Image (cartoon, rainbow, N blue to C red; front, side, top):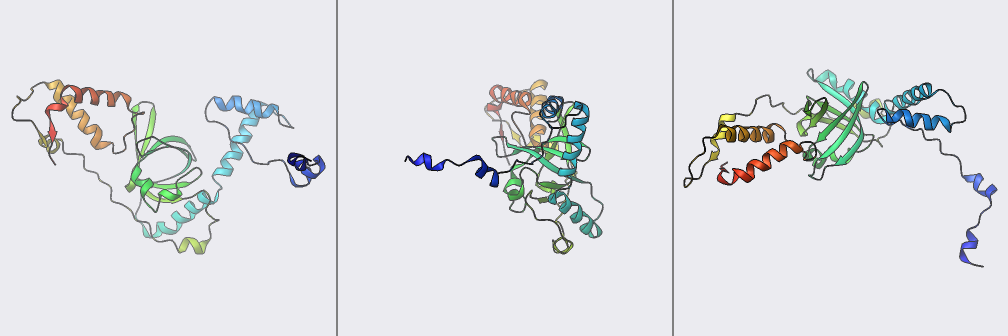
Length: 264
């Protein structure tokens, strides 16, 4: 008898230890979700109207995501430590998508009770031993003083750096208990830098070579100022999100950058 013939199992034996998967599905955000809902409704045992089916799936998805252990941990964590902290602008969100951008940073899709938003996560957060190991699909992040920006409106992004992150709860965390929450240390709140970069100070660091005559072109200087502000204000820089700005920067470097050098 061949070896593969020994693997043959009757259907009644399989049914004794196999059961149908009961995992629930989520709808894709946007118009694509309507098509997905129609396809799922068509193969269901008790079909409804597409609109009703989509509403039922969206409601079940909301209840599942915002009733997870990670979300419960975040709620209890904030309630416990809010007594000893001053008023903070907190944002609690669930990570629905996460992809590396090739530069060490990560692109995220965040979901909160009122909507979703794209985000850029700085690589220092990923390297931090308190946050990095817990970041992944389904984790819950508590953020403070995050800023939204837009390269091309109406598409807005949240720029998340190390000082914005207060706590991260992994998707596989255990159910929260009052005793466990009370044992958590008080969160470390990093100070917010409110001062804008001093343009005059930055420009003084540009030293022109003595053997070349300085350029008086206003276009050149304005483009230089835009480039400096761009890399100063936005600490997490993604090439795919700012293609036009990168092209401007590279054009300036090729044309004028060889005549300058920075002194720090």
